[in-house]
Length: 414
Image (cartoon, rainbow, N blue to C red; front, side):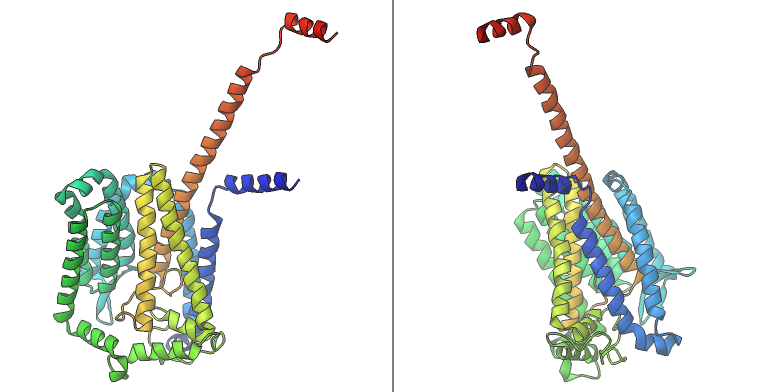
């Protein structure tokens, strides 16, 4: 009796055409983000807009738009992305050029396009479209990437074009995430080790040059090394963030009881959202968020391995890219707020305040769910095809006994 019930449960699980875990984790990250953004943004929203829920309401609208975008993305087959990724790459380049020409300047950075009531951060769709293009390129030029130096450097030339446009904004954080993801994907595609290490050393050298020849980047690096040497200058954000982590301890001060959000910590509801989460929910809350993000990353890498074993290389490289993207962006965001890395303006995926990031990350999650959906449907169809084939074969092998054979059998029994 137990075995029958167990078989039925496993069959239902196998027949489910979607990844329930990814959906539940996405909802959990949305929920945690909404609660913490609401708590962290109330003081500054009250001062700037006379409405403590100003940013909370906007964040809820962004989540609603992100859910709609994810639903639309789920209806698009992966064949659409395979066909359209070169055109999406051109669209991303156009957005990056356009933002430099007519973009809005905020705090010395030109990163936002204003289209009526809508504000778009061009770097967010640029990341997704570039990774989709890179996945398509690795499928189309797989042998060249493995055997030919020219095939290895072609996608890097496209990356350097993107990097140049992003550094003009400037947005070094996005460049670092894109560079690391690109190198990791080329390594997974089978690029030779000497090429791999050569480009890593070249990237590190370029990073050092960018720091040396930029005053504000040098200040960020020196502030990162010893923030308490200038706690009211270059190290101000990091010292306030570290105070928030210290006050949080294991269980936190309680939801809504943060002191650093009272405008001591700038950008508390965006780049430093994890510091406020740590102060209010403690290290246990931080651990829960990290486990949820880790689940997304691990699932993406598993989907990539499964897709590769089922001869779906585009889906595999896309899954790898999204998983690495989530991993690196989370690492950079939390590393900046904890002092492990220099401060960078990157959001925490699906948690930080910001419409462009929220929508694009939701689309990326929907692509992961779509990849899993197509592989499940393919597996279910194959399973049903095998069952029908077995039924046909069983019908052919089991013949109806003839009249003569039945009479002979009766006489022998008598």
